[in-house]
Image: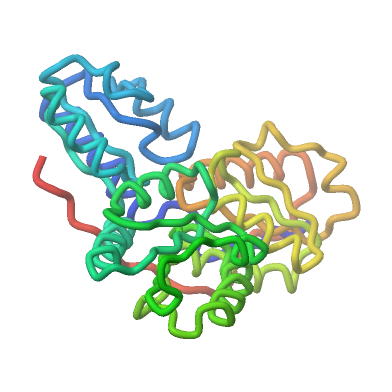
Length: 305
């Protein structure tokens, strides 16, 4: 068996920043430090931070008044920020800067009386937070079929934003339909799908050309990890999303001579290392190599904590 590692893979700049914010808050203020929702969508990251004293909650009311409360990398609505103030919480915003950019665009478009179309998965925390920055009409759309049913105030004043972790291919199809329906649609100067999401999807697309199977390391609720699996499947390569090596079904690997491995943007690199070790221990692995790919050197500054 040969193993080929995708490049890039694993933590993105926004995830690094969010985890560092929680760790820094724990070091400065001591446990417990509260986090609204999962800071990033990875079970291993959450467990490690819990062991250090982070407490993850689903409702602001579950946080004692006066406590430090961190907003997750996915972002929150304006209403949540205002509620936190009313409850007397000292907040720290770990929203990914690229998500914050989308929030600002939603506010701007509504200010100039545009209907905003949010392209994304209904109910995803990032989409909920993005819609919560609207001061006017906002609509969530997930498929081209939904476009026909939109109730728009003025078809000449429509703009869109996207969830940052979407599939490049799926979004392209949806945008084609949007442009046909709204020829004057206001578009962002560059895609809202973040560079890390794009880079990882392109890497998997290229990896699919040379392997028999792809294992994606990531948690089941990670949007960007699920998109990586879908990219491989669209290239007719079997792909499986696993939280760790223990979830592998060995039947998947029958007759697989070349196995590709990637990791979602919220998955720690040590999980990839453990997966390679598991394969070495259970199969005759001839080589492990990393494919050529993009080097990501972007680092987001931490906020004042």
